[in-house]
Picture 1: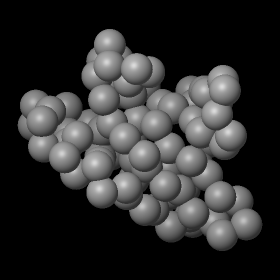
Picture 2: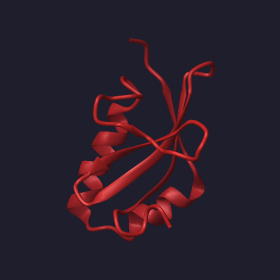
Picture 3: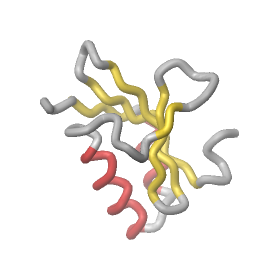
Picture 4: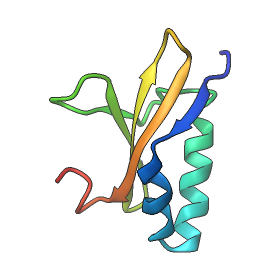
Length: 86
């Protein structure tokens, strides 16, 4: 499978800064893996939203969108599981 480009919304940097260092490393590895497989087996499409998916990384959730035509993955936000769907 060909590689997808990866874009981050401006709020993602702020989200990552507030997390513990060990969690950031795991999350960034999972986000980087989305370039090769934007819809991994453990991804879940979010109900009520057009084209948004989430992956679970420990207690954190990465919410992202996939544009198949532009071959682009856009990370919208990274939050703790208790806050992500508010």
